[in-house]
Length: 274
Image (cartoon, rainbow, N blue to C red; front, side):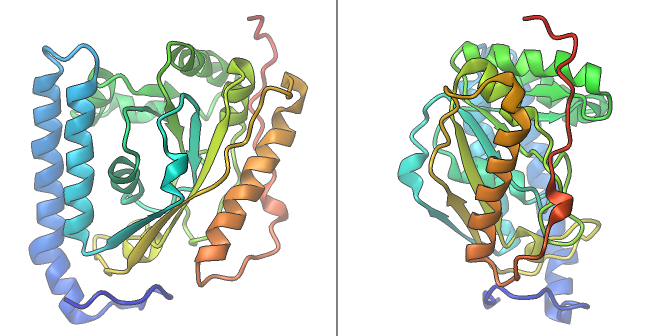
């Protein structure tokens, strides 16, 4: 099937793509996810460092991206040098996670919504592979869960997080939680901003129909945080949002909207005494 140029997703998508999705892409996607997830759980019985599980997850990501029919291009990959940092990207689609695992050539942990850890199989895998839960619905619980992420960073493991807390329903960026800024300031580590472009058109929320288009991961300049203090969490969050927006709209066919709604969603650090 010919790869289309990136543009507005047709509704409905062509019949040939719907047939390919339901007869091939979607079933293989789920079977691959179940296979590699089971393999990762098995590896966790002896893999205490997480290296084998991460290698399995990266293989899964690369295969799933190919199954989707997308062509992935990563820009400025020299900035993906494995330094301990908080890696941050927008969130458009289920395909974002495979793209991230495909493109980042080093071991890292994902900060994920706490409710995912309660799900059978998915939750087992997240816990066994050392991913970090965060509660985005309860501000005080969020501070406690972010403490676990801070500990992971201080132990020398890079972290990845989607600061929007969920997938975009429109293809445009949603408001950012200030958790990444909180973690980066607490540890004095940099933020690596990234933008995923094309996955919304490839597989938007609530769809199982793949529309193969080029997908891009654009990596921005590191944002150093050593000069920030905890009173500047929202300021840093705004800077992160602005940079990811710049990366996204400079590579997307979409026009950058007026976005007063993209102010940070505050996670209160009140009562955090560390």
